[in-house]
Image (cartoon, one colour):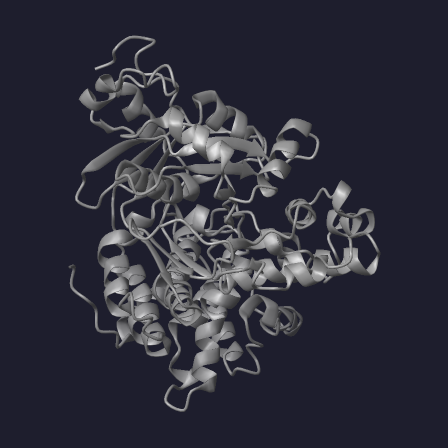
Length: 556
């Protein structure tokens, strides 16, 4: 039902006639966007670093709904620290509008034009105009929060050997005026805020990792300590950063599945008459589009610690609570009820040739595996956070969210950076078992099976004996070097087992030394079984599934 070449463009001109969009089934902004942008630029209160899918699908959408209700009068500013072309090709090309396509499990679809983003910038010191604008934002009295979705590895300053990454080491040497690493540029902006009167601010990590606020604080603090000790920062900067009355680092738990943009969704939007909705590959091998597709469910729990005050953001999936509640919510999701299940499906989905998470949920053995990980092994170690019931959350994940056939999420996407995820997603549960008088580490069967499956995955040969492409991982070269010489169908000898031992002892990868935890032998036993030949992975899953004592939940 296209309206003509000029009618359904996603930009300021194309939105002038909102009736066309409404007729095509789109929700549109219900506030004066021009006034919103003007107020936001003059008195910004929230800037977000990380211009990807979860920002548009969750944060920008939540702010839009609050703007529609008249509960907010200003919107968001976003900055990209990687993939600067995202700003030019996705944001500025569409006057900072985006489209959210919400894919519900019942098959219905909601289409929303989001206009709550008032300004988009690059965190690029080579772009003098953008970086000067960022500095001016950080000088504003009104700025209350800088938030981040830059992935867990964005806070890592060292390589796998423990040495500082070269651009981090260079930033330590040159100081805040010439910083070029991601966190270095953030700390440089904080230095600007410090110099403009030690103005208060909350730095809020919203990344999907344990104790995210602590990780951000540690990374920021390392720069400040180095610059202070080298005389590159003025006296008092270290005290400013470490004074929670001036700078806070709230912890958060965020939960929303936002896969990469699906080409079929782009075609659906273009069939409606919206122009230029085809996803494209960017130079850093990630995919982007003027739209984002996401599930309906979403949770964001934030520690209520804002030294410069905060806007009224409660509602629309956003909760504020004490740190203990945030930590329990985060551990429930990341260590028990969602992330471990996702990783299990990612590893075995790649091995078994699946390309959709929802299709894996029709596989009895994989369904049984994640039920066992969640209900039998995970829930006994989970604390109830008070605001979200763990059992009900898990029911929703297994029975509604993962099986959603309209969510184009892939095991290959979830398998990215697995070496960085295992320690939290499984290691914390192992630690809970080791520390408990009521739980027995020997009762864990499915978690060591996932570890063995990941080692089998690293061979890069699927269960049919065919090669497949491994997902990106910062430790991939090291991991493949450790397992070199291990081949499908080859018996595991003493030398090969010693190589595996060096991996299984690595508490940075698994969260614990698996030998000291008494789990390594079980991992190796499973691994040997899965390396016998084609079909062995399926055989092990069938055997474990048949012996499982998990009580499975009915679809809710």
